[in-house]
Length: 253
Image (cartoon, rainbow, N blue to C red; front, side, top):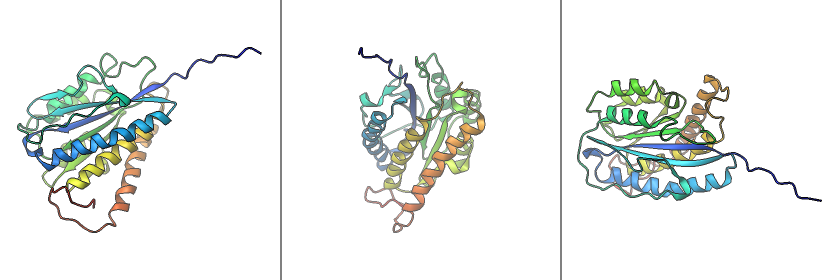
């Protein structure tokens, strides 16, 4: 009996975007924790991608201070080929968050980073910052809110340290419960890893934009990520209290 050949399953793409504040106040242990977290989470994301027959997983990183810079400006990188290069520990510059929002908006389109042959799932966008925007962030965010990829995305923010301005973070996420506080280096590192893994696991199994998915279903996907991250955070809160400094030896919660 002749063997019947079957076509491979068409795999969609899910992209995780990291928007990383690289202004001067992020120098030292803060950016060191970001470097460690992203480097360590990549193998976990690679394992998720291997086990997922529905989707390909990609990573895109936008650094912002006075200016913006994509780590790979022309394309998101397949997670199996992604290699993290550490951001220098000594940083300078302001927090041009509005410029970052405009730059993200320019890449969230089918003519740029979302140009996948088999289509894309809604992306996950993780914003990390420790301070106050130094430009007109509202204008940049208003432009970004016109982008359907953004409005359908999983949007999470990490407020790094006590000086992070929560107003733009809540405007960005659209949900105060989607803002997670990192009081020390260990918390920041664990939160980045937890959010990236959870978002990729849930987001890469959802239906993509244009498949008749309602706004309620899209919101429930985001809510599921937020709920699962909060569950883990609550578990870790039972650990002994730690200081609020930024030494690498801090305990998570």
